[in-house]
Length: 145
Image 1: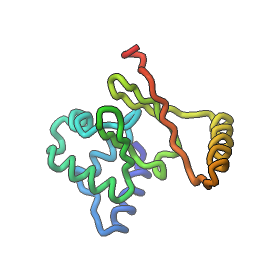
Image 2: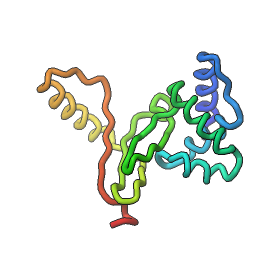
Image 3: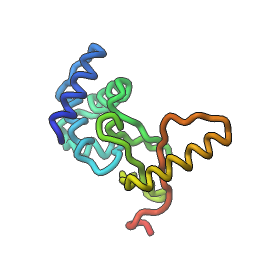
C-alpha cells in the first residue's frame, strides 16, 4: 500500500474535521492491498481481530461519507467497498452472479477509448451528457463455472 494514499486519505479526513484513526487506517490499508472490493465480513476476516466489528462498521461509514470508499451493491444485497477512484485510478469490475465475487479488471487504454466513444453515443442519443462511467461485467467466475 502506498504511503501517498494514506497521506491523501489523512488530508481528506482532516479537511472534514475527522481523524485517521487506527481502525480507519487498517481498513484503508487492507482495501489498498485487495484485488477487488471487499464486504465487511471479508474485511473483518482480513483484519483478524485487529479492529472490533463495531469499529469496522463505523469506519466504513465514515470513510464512505468522506468519499474515501466507494460502495458496490452487488448480488444478494451484499455491499462491498473499495478505495475511491480518485485514490486508485479508473477501473472496472467482473461480478460473479453465483458467489458474489467482485474483481477489478483493468482495461487497456485503446479499449477504454472505444468504451468512452460508445458511452458518448448511447448517452448522446438520449440527450444526456455523460461525466463518467463504471462498467460491471456480470457472469460466473472461474471457480463457479
